[in-house]
Length: 386
Image (cartoon, rainbow, N blue to C red; front, side, top):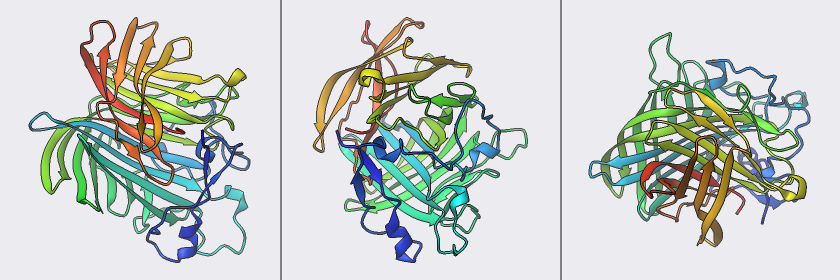
């Protein structure tokens, strides 16, 4: 299994312009920093811990003292003929050096933060993916090519944008959003413009928002808005298609997300027909005898969260398939002991490989009751390090 480390996107620094390079950043093998370098030393950066306190709307915005961060949205949609579509929109931020390490000779051309964005739109065998990069400083403003502003909330890279439509002073900035993006590839243009309305509260994973990711204590600050109702349009195959459905937004920041020997993860975000939500993940390797680290959250329809540990969740891959040369598990058995629930999670379409700078699998999944075989939900699965 290959472990990948991104070399600080130096092509952006050398280009002297605000557009992304046509070739992806260089990748190097690194056997001591975990998947994608997320287990590298966090010295000099702020640390995620259970002592941190989430504060809104401030925490909707960027945390430049931490090394890595993302705003990650997935959606399960249907068109007017009830045919399913899947959607992803993600904005990543990566600090180039600890806050105190900025040299006195730094100029406006020095990038303190690097930004990367992914979008994907999928229906049946049609899986469209695009990626963009930008550079910036610790101080984002509305003229920046990429960035996030906490209030009024706005996250963007070029015209890939997630903007708050919330007007009430008493409402959360993420309660009502407008998502828009458009890209062009060899097959033509694709994109979407969607309105998202939250029908439940924000949920804080782990211990008051600190989500542990390894037995050694590495982790992240992590909260979600898993209750979005979605409506709008997608552009696909030279058509504008009206869609509706539900979406899940993850917010996470850290300076050392993984143990240095963890090789990747399997990450589930599931909407159940009962109204409950489930987030579960398996971080592979890194523990004693190379054991996996398993954690998650059971979220009631009212938004009450119950943290789940390894004793509460069983994740078992059942079937594997080869996608773009990578063997990935596309059918799982997931058991929740306390909820007396065992489900089968299956990817109806397997060609959802994200051929981006750090490649991974990301796609919609169906959830069925393992005993009755009845459909009881849907969601998204992300798998890295395969």
